Length: 230
Image (cartoon, rainbow, N blue to C red; front, side, top):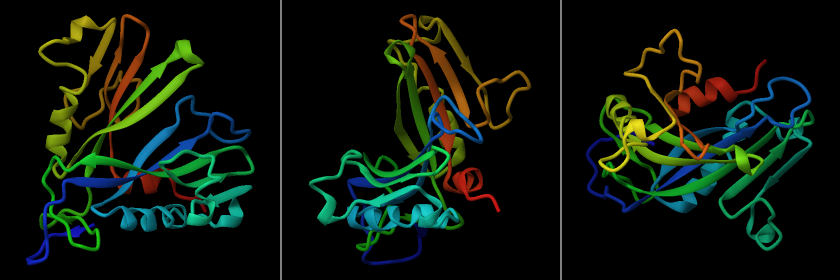
């Protein structure tokens, strides 16, 4: 991704391909054992082949070497028929202590009408070097639990992303009071009594028991949190 300059070849693609890193520490024998896998979007491209190439570089860019992992597999055309980690996943890496890193690609509409170059590079307004991604995590504790995280938006301006969190779980048909519990913060500052983490802007519990968390993530924060500690 790059800041936008003048280019006669730039166009507005219909779709964007987001490269997603998931770090699952639930079975780790040392270090943190977070009950919910941590999901971050590492970058965005307008061409799927560019996204695939970028996905293969994510874990090395975090400072890891393939030898750091007990298992390290990349999806290639030769492995397509025997690949067992899901259609979206491009890289699977399991650390000796049990942490699992996966890198996949999620396809979404280009709602911000971002321009791009034919090589897949997404262009940003001058002075911007990354997007702010809104993620919705759903935890169904009745299903062992079943945990899913979906990209709900990608925004150039953080203020727009924060505003979007306010309507991610509510609408004209669904109000905050329709949930068994609904907590939302107003802005960037984290309230003193906020127990959900600095990335989470909305937390809600449905009357049927499902938990929802709406969070904002950026690639720089993902590198800071998931990069190899030296």
